[in-house]
Image (tube, rainbow, N blue to C red; front, side, top):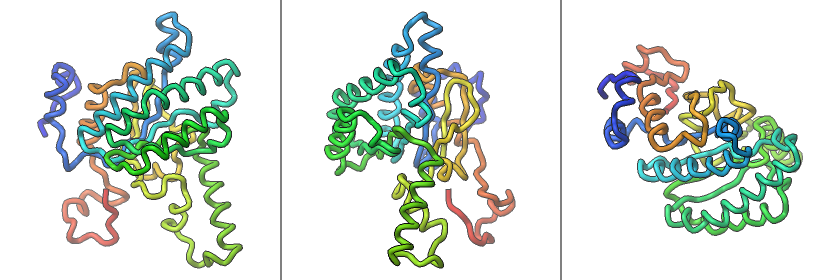
Length: 271
């Protein structure tokens, strides 16, 4: 790949940026913390919900780009457990927006071959929103072009706690022996089981923390932080993030010499 700096990339068209991507070096799984909707609205003198509504367009563009590039998994952080602490009026509006999104986008997801799945303590959602979550999950369960996972009422710590509880119950019922427990076994109890761990985490708005998102799964993930607010993070910004990712050397605890001489490696973890 040509070594172009950020200023040079800024002058390239989206098609030129996409032409620089190396298919074999694309991430299999992208995770996204969609941050900055409220600030986007405030900068324009608009209600906070205007930012959330505009952010839906960024979700659409990222889904389409992932499909176009053959990226198999996209996980987005839509509503955290901590978000329940927000004003009731905003929570109600967000739940209405979620339901509206699912109603409007279900057919588009089917056309794009996107399997929709929600993770988190989703039973806390309002009954009408939860019903639509379940409906879209059922309608897209057979699709496999893209695995779209949406974290709702989600917290990374609670996900691990819930996994340990289920594992402990299986130990109690003699389904699992204590000596069988290892990382691979525990991963099977996480809500993301069946998906590869994210290769790339994108967080918008300039914040540089993971905010209780996918704590187990992000162990070896490359992180991309950008000051761009989520409603402004579109196809072009995603391409720039992917180009940045492809320049990185993923070592998984190994030395550069080990990566340069893969035949000499022992216990190699693949990217």
